[in-house]
Image (cartoon, rainbow, N blue to C red):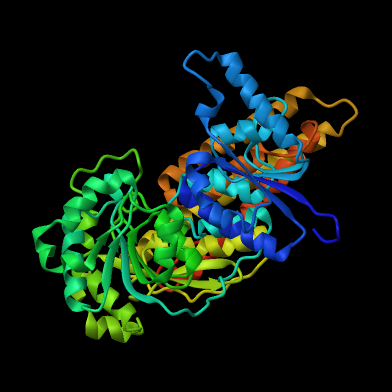
Length: 548
């Protein structure tokens, strides 16, 4: 992207406000590294229009769309709506994109991306046969893994940066004088993510009592006003009524941003407000529960503590029902209020702090994550130094293997200490690695057989078809294996998507691409096997991985 000519890049982001803010953060880094880039954002009006005060800084053009804009009146026909979409696409094509990047990974966005003209396309789109097409590896990773696995080691901002080709590192921290204000956003998009009004009342009471110099501001949207009234009008908070300011439904997004920017602290759930705080680098405590995945959604800056339950069922899936919500009980208001006091007093959250200042009872079922930035972006470190789970270990494995596979960057991590049960579980996963390694080896064997036959002057179609069928059986066996060893799912799913998007105009070229996929997959699963072996070899003996 060097030279005097500006490169025109269109970015599609049709998901919610938080995702638009994270897209802004990634695009800002791209713009810093490539000042001549001209960026256009295509976003939904209801999620992006209120963010003009941020987006104007980065994007030369913004196109806000909404479904209702395509249906002019109740009597509008499907043909009229179709013509409205065509008009939109015609206007977008006038911008003459060099590159179009779809960061939404939704059906509506993939069809829109397929209609917009660009010399290069990244992310989810449709090809001329109306098939899903994903050309770049990072987007293949997001599509195959992010929505289907809990072993995601990358923050969403880093994933967006990687797709866009921007560098990943910590935002530069700028000191500023802050006012004696604590902002809370005690609302969430679903019951699973919401701590509950009573918990928030308990927290507000303790924080206001222990920090008499602080004013408390409650922020949220119009839909949150009923819950906000319950909170601020609680009899338990009556003595503090003059220090509680209910801004719920009364402030624009920009006004909320200004308030958070001046505050000493924000306490909230995983939400749009937490990402606004990341832009202003306001110290933040995030309470993650239910379906929230902290490694992906933690606000992208250094001044964050993210509290999450230490339960096997966390994070749960959206479609799973849970009436008791046990993860909500794992995070106590006493722990949160002590962390609030620690941030206000600029205390150091090290092992000594948690041993001397926090009861082990409050830490028993909760992890407290803080960001650490490296050349591969954000890592989340459990600052309570509690024992890692097998899932935590696999997140580290995947940070290592994906970083090398996608960017040829070598990362070093300390060998984790695990209990006997975790070591035994991890050792079992070495067997799963061996199975997949062997299956990918057969994939290479059958791919080579197709390539050799296809190169003959008179190829035998039956031989080619038989070997292609065998490659299909390998995919089925890999699916069975990942059900037994679910933490290996990211590798299996990625290389399935990678092979499905193999480049080539004929059987020979496509099979050559698949051969490389099987080869890369085998190397990657071998790295995971070796990492498991390094951790467990002294505790558990095993046979070396088998070559095919």
